[in-house]
Image (cartoon, rainbow, N blue to C red; front, side, top):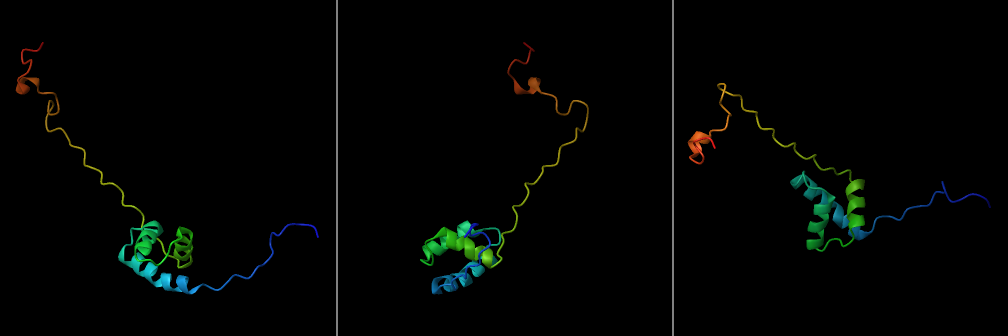
Length: 102
């Protein structure tokens, strides 16, 4: 028989009881914390003793179609405009040190 196994169909196993139990908490976590992703959900699931394998958490997260919101862009500060010609010039005379200009 020539050729590899590429394209061969293989039936997948039905989801286990642990996976079915994990799907609902993952959906609840995604609703409650939309900016957090599957990694943080995995940490919470481990704390609750629901799952131990991160690959399983990620696969269920992807199968459920869960997504995290994108990160917020950093706020840009408005650039100050000079109110007169020497507004942003150094003010050595006011600092006291070397006020005579040396």
